[in-house]
Figure 1 (cartoon, one colour):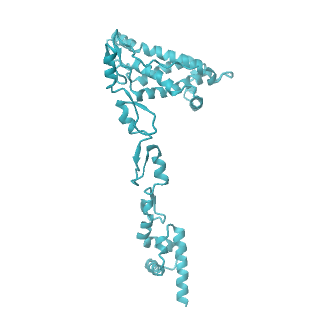
Figure 2 (tube, rainbow, N blue to C red):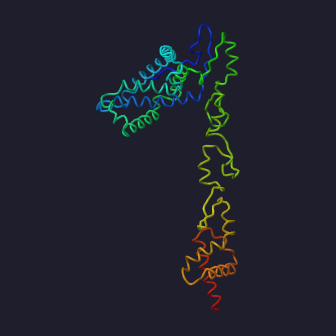
Length: 335
């Protein structure tokens, strides 16, 4: 059973005035996102301890009941809040203004009416087992596309407009005819526009485009490590830690230096002496003083006609080169 998509036309118009139907796309998307976990919580709580029912069995009925309940509460929210405020003569009442908090309260109220005996136990409500079951059921509904995001967004749009008392998340403009309304919509800051980044299918309100662009995974950026590679934001982390020639690395010889990987050859050449001393102290633990190690390192460099010492990129390769040179030195001295 699929819920009908909400009519995107003018809403809550007064008299003959036509209201702009646009709203904050990011807020609508955010609201749509937590409708699914809310439904999962209701289904899990209502079937906990029931050997004959699983959350998936009651999901269709619970979805309809939850949407009807939350929608009805949202439709009377502003009028009920104003009446309560007048009754208490308190203009600064505790009435929440955040649409997400308001809808969350409605969903919690609905959920509390569907909990069975076990579901009312405080220990169960706070348990990890309950959270795990809710997460699992959310994943199941996502995999089966039980409640697609576009349908949730249609419902979220209606809810958002109904409870947005200060019109922070939807356009409040109203006009007396379609022509003036159309002129306004062409310039409305809440109007949806397609993301300009190739591959991104998102439609975002004009007022949200800057925030979306700053996080869009399809945005083409220059490598954060300045390797001049241009790639999508979603590929940046993988690039920086795997193939980027500018990714930082520690000296393989343990000399406390850090540098871009592409500069390893330069580093090994510039710091050959300290690298040699570290390797020599491991090979010859006894038999050399500090000055003796330095003299021996200089002698090895003189015997290294092929420059193999400077070309060594790790301790093992440098150790092998040193041992081969020492053998050569002994042979020359014995001849």
